[in-house]
Image 1 (tube, rainbow, N blue to C red):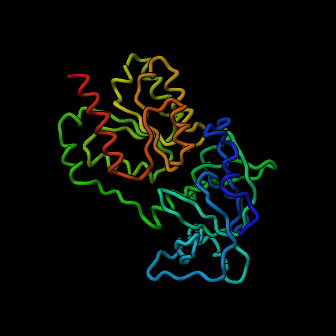
Image 2: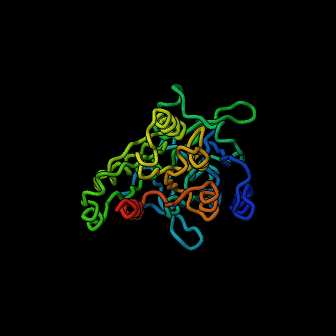
Image 3: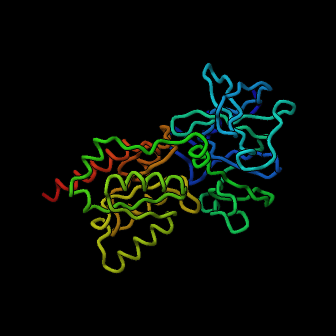
Amino acid sequence: MVNTPKQSTYRSTYDNGQKKGNQMEMLTFFLTDNQLYAINVFKIIEILECPSKITTLPHAHPSIKGTINFRGKSISIIDVAEFLKLDVLDYKNKLCYVIVCEYHKMVQGFLISAPDTLLSRGWEDIKKPGDMVSSCAYLTAVTHSEDGKMIQILDIEKMIIEIIGVSEELAEEYIEMSKDERYKKHHILLVDDSKAARTMMKTVLDKMGVTFTLMDSAVGALQLMEDLSESGDNIPKMFSMVISDIEMPVMDGYTFCRKIKSNAKLSNLYVMLHSSLSDKASIVKAEQSGSDDFTPKFDPNVIAVKIMRRIDELEKKRS
């Protein structure tokens, strides 16, 4: 086991479930190109030295090296460098490490060259990738280290969807229920910087027959609503609900929600935060930001139920 802080230390910015400050705490690490990469600390369970023997999985995705035993359970090991088309890691002959993470209630191991450091950055210091790095489809944002080195924050969600897959199937009963003409009268604003997440949500909302608008940033979504309200539009009547991701560059979902709730023209909007950060502390933080609901990402049936419940509440008020 690597002499690196455990999950309890990773969560040191939380005090009794309350986060101190508006920051992302990340673990930076190296791959075979010797560049700095990062992922959110709150998805990390543990960091391990990679065993030299990994049990091969037949017919698996090329980036899945196999499985290892982790706390009595078998978990897949994904070579991040190979997936990004970098030189593969020689884990059989060189010291490498595995970052064990939980995404969408699934535990996976991510093979890396070496962990670097824990780093906190305000969301305003986390930017969308510029033209120089936009060629990598698996970057969700960039920031910089204390000495000015670029840190590339990986879109692990998109990687997992492409490697392992996430179900976009919606139960037939919900598809049938949503054929009610009432649902077609409602408009949902969806905000998520992840293209993979927007694609999945679009599939679900299309199946439900609900009208929706997709936005890739909280900054853009807030500006849209403010501009429309200045033009005289009643935004809470225009949008039946807002579904927003939490982890987004420049403005995170918590800040987005607080800004909505503090704006007199927007405060009655129903906001549901939608994230792969589904731990207790994240849910508490969502409540503190003023969100009306919270749901984990990539569970189409749960999302459909919550959307229909919200629409049913509105219809009852109008009848």
